[in-house]
Length: 197
Image 1 (cartoon, rainbow, N blue to C red):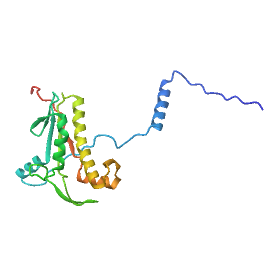
Image 2 (cartoon, helix red, strand yellow):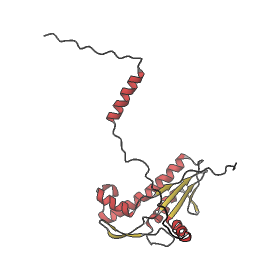
Image 3 (cartoon, helix red, strand yellow):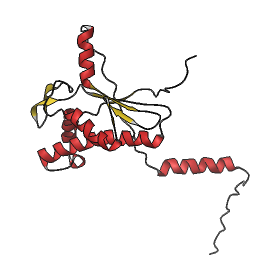
Image 4 (cartoon, rainbow, N blue to C red):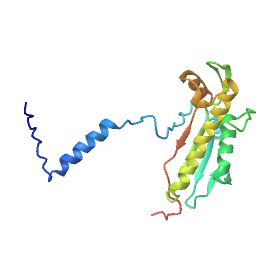
């Protein structure tokens, strides 16, 4: 029995668009994309109808201002600090362990696995940078803020279940996120020092 020859189709070598398209399709089919990645940001809720003085007081108490200037100097609240100090400052603000009056107010909530718990769900870390600040400094600030939340969540998970936050099941993670919700609001970058026209 003679083997039949199979004809190989000719590929037009001048059609690079076709080859690029085939490579793109191959990439899309063989690559898995994580949609959960990225920087999660939450804007602060609008203030409730209260007298202006009271609203300003609540707003000031619940917001931690973080500002990165054009020289990559970092200001947290009213103090200039190093990036290395930001994580502890943020953790102190987010947790408000002593429920201090100058720190974010807490709400009593019924949290699964924890029962009635004081939750700091009104806090907001407001991050703003100058257009002249470096990308590396900006990413370092972002990393420290996210690390503050991650450490607090890990500490609570260890205390409750002797596991890291990542090792918990979905319901347990949800409960911890309810206690430590990530609330970072990014204001539009501004350029300071320009002359007004």
